[in-house]
Image 1 (cartoon, one colour):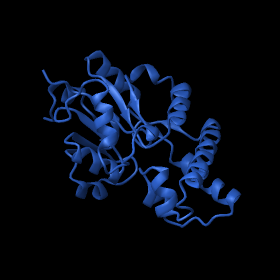
Image 2 (cartoon, rainbow, N blue to C red):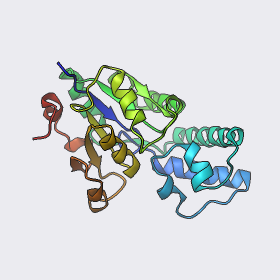
Image 3 (cartoon, one colour):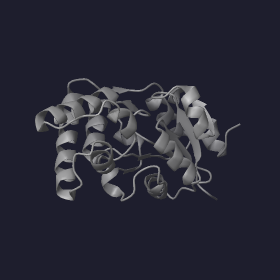
Image 4 (cartoon, rainbow, N blue to C red):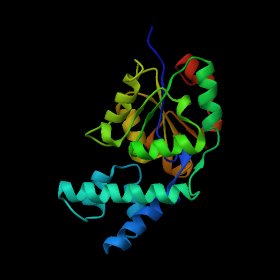
Length: 221
């Protein structure tokens, strides 16, 4: 029998980390004396640093320099996050606990870094609710390519056609659909009217609006 898996993006789905991420880019730009376009955060949302730094910010195209800037940015993010600038989003703990009780495995597919996941696991006691994670370091192609979700689903032997992706970013929704997943859009970052053109299977405000029985049945009623 094909297996249903719940694949969660992280930032903007499970945790609200937008303030910490935006402030970390600002801190890095100040420290490195680099320009920061006014719309950089919106354009880069959901994308990997390996795309943001050369293509959106235009800071460098050298792999070693991109890696240095990326690592420095993520270290700044963790410092800011520890000071209380991230929070658990509504429904995240309740839904993952409910799915675990129903035998539906939960995994993570994210553009964030493993160290960022580890920090949030520690801060919110979440690690036991997930059976695995694929992070930025585990993929070569970022969203909207579905690689991150396909790899996350495969960790627990899931069937993408019966599995669910929970996303808030445009690039992530495109990745979920491209991978053949039942794709749920969360209006935590963008308003519903902005999400409608992405053609997700359902739009919800946050994870508190997700019915666990959808995943038990492998389809949305």
